[in-house]
Image (cartoon, rainbow, N blue to C red; front, side, top):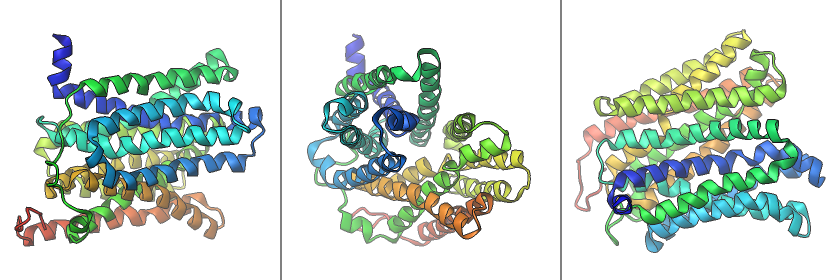
Length: 408
């Protein structure tokens, strides 16, 4: 009876997607905790080690692009189960491949390519899978879904740190096996739960139709701004913690990102509670305004503690941006299908890379003044505010549906 319940209850589908974002958090945040260990144990330069982050990010972008075309043809279930398996193999490969490949660096790259494949598929798939579930309160479910990445990030950092403290960093290979168990079990979970699709086969909008819509182009801008607003500050959270709390770099690396993750996750949980009574466009606009205030506080307060508070407020303010954009896009493009989510994820990932780049360039121009450099990223929440207002005007003026069922 319990098994029958799993196979027919879409709440289990949503839970599997929640765990999917925990897997995504492991994929993106576990290996960086081992970078110095990789350097010391394998004799790999820090320059090569830092390039591993770029490889992971770029390959996930590549998977986003491929998924836009391939997922609807292959099927949601096969792809999401494969995503968990790829993630599991890649995570456990971190501890195995460096010892069996001709050199440790190539082994690490293969492991990262495996779990980047899983991570890219997860990012593209979990949102449309939840959106397709016949459940109530879709906006709440979407916001809560994305909060699990935040909690997953926090979970990975805290558990890994505790493991290293108790068992020693030399036993890091054991931890790769432990983390790999989660996606392995979730692959089985996804194989059992019911999975619906957003559109019937052949009914989804084409990429040409999507890109011909001014409204969709605005959603791309909104997603870029959401990712950039988030990572423009998050990337520097440890530096703010280190300076504001006068702690060591190790403690700062834990405290800053953890504080940012807690406030961002809390924001998404809060919105999941009030979503049915809230105008999402207005709420996102308010949060973007709060984000501008947070950037200003972090940059110009003159007090390191207040700068850290600004960083925390920023985490709260950006929480609704990514899932909110997905929810608004789903309302506007009922036949958007997986391609829509894949393109929006791609835009968001680009923003996640572009935001910190803008901060880094601005900091260099301003004589390495990090606080003032961070303020350069304020352009992204400002642009998001403008985009949301233009979106609102387009919806007011446009006809609701054209002959093809596409919201203009």
